[in-house]
Length: 107
Length: 118
Image (tube, rainbow over all chains, first blue to last red; front, side, top):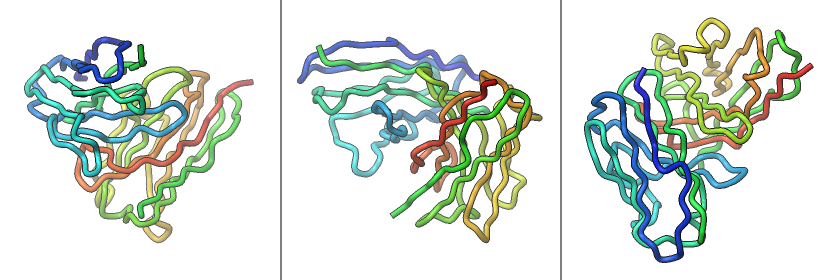
């Protein structure tokens, strides 16, 4: 199985900060990577698909980049409503493993 | 508007069986990808299983093969997850998710909690 290593596991930042989360795959997954946001007590929400494509309706402060084994998720200007846990997910091959998650908090 | 509603969760004893349902509206189960994802209390997301097309496209997480079975009823526009030989570590919120293209989980239900305990 492909393993996904996401870091950091938690992050504290101030409103307006630029926030970056990384995800590393154990083998080449091309661009077959998604990013999800999960707020407490809620279902996850797709933010980015195919590594860098913004899902419809998602604010443009969210972005993704990368290919192969190394991927980055960025929030350009952190907003209070962005407090959540973020997950990467590969879909190059089954099983579609998720990263361990990054819990984002406001400083 | 797409809605996915999971039902069937509850408290079950170890070794027991449970069938979860995911009823879809505004989204056609038979022609799209339907996935189950679970989340143990306080833990991350775990991909469980997917079904698509005529039924030949079915995949499971390695650790669940043989105990869990995904299926669907097109007439009811509903997907199921049959879970057998349940163990304490199967305790989780189970989400169903739908997508038009493979890989991306576009729409999610609210989840149903399964608790395996004596």
